[in-house]
Amino acid sequence: MTAAILDASRWIDASLANKQKTAETVAQKSFVNTDTEVIVGRMLGRYENGLGRSWDDKNHMKFFNEGAVNFPYLSDGMWFMTQHKRWGLLKSDPDYLAVAKAVNRIDIYKQAATAAGVALPKSDMRSHKLIDGVVWDGKDPKKYAASFKIMA
Image (cartoon, rainbow, N blue to C red; front, top):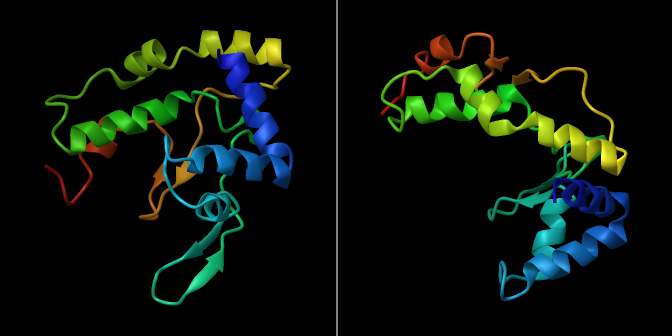
């Protein structure tokens, strides 16, 4: 199933026609129930704020991006847990890395990636500069989870 998702994701990203077909499918009443163009616009990074401003985001939605989109980075799993801790869904700090390793199942992904001919990233961890300007890298999730001014 994971290999099939990788193949489908690669197909979506391969062309505008494939994005259009995906949008037509997702927009159907049984899924999102909206106009196809609304979905296509978001997929291409075309946004409107409802107040007359519109813009194109160079970092538009990607489904494959050479496999980077679908890789179950441990740091991503850990970040989600920090948010659960922040908002009171976790009462204490778990062993963030151990839980991420158990849940993210990189072993399954690697088998699927090999079957689908998808390159693997150099590391199971990655860093990002988030919207608040803070860099998340997974090195100290307990400290990160406790660092927010607004918490539950």
